Image 1 (cartoon, rainbow, N blue to C red):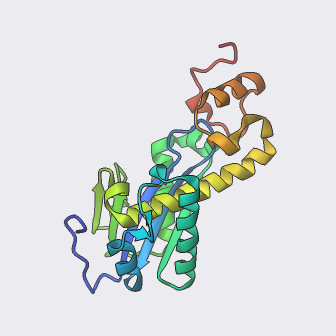
Image 2 (cartoon, rainbow, N blue to C red):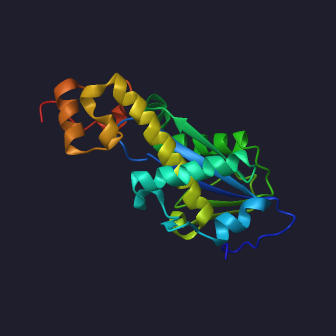
Image 3 (tube, rainbow, N blue to C red):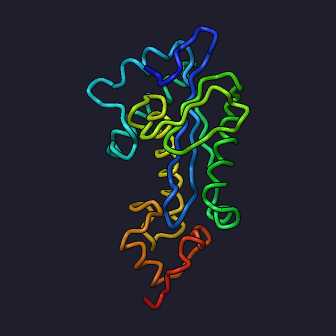
Length: 213
C-alpha cells in the first residue's frame, strides 16, 4: 500500500512532504512536512476522505474543500493525531540561491522543526528528496494523488501559502495577489507592466519581461 515500505510497529511515524509555489512570479515557495502518528494512521491513510469530501492533491480541490480539510487537520493536530510544519523561503532568497536550493532548504527545515528521526518513513512528491540521513524515504511521481499523507502535506502548504499571499495583497492591493497568489496570469503581468516589480517579486523569474511589452 505504501510503495516499497510496510507500516511497521517500530516505525512510530509516517511523514509526507510536498511543495507549493515553485512557479509563481511573486511570493515564497512553501514546503510542508506532515506527520501522522500511529493513532491517526487508519483515519488518514485508509479512509482517504472526509465524509463525501475526497482527499486529493490540493490543486485538484477547491478553495473551500482545502479549507475544510485544513480545519479537520488542525483539529486532529490538537488531539495529537498528526503534526505538520510549513516552511517558506522568500522571493529574495529564491533570487539569491535559486528555486531548487530554496526548496531543499525549506524541506530540510520543515523536517528539522517537525523533529523527525532518520529511521521514520518519509514519502515525497515528484522529484523531492529528503536529506541523505533519512534512509527510509521514497520519492513518488504524482505522489500527491497516490499517497494520502502527501496529499495532506500538499493541502497544508497550499492553504498556508495562499493565506500568506492574502496578507501581502493588503500591502499591494493593485497587484491582485488575493486572486492569483503570485502566479503569472495576464492580470498579474499587466499589473507589473503598469506598477513595476515589488520586493516580493522573484526578479530572476522576470528577466525576460519588460514593462515596455
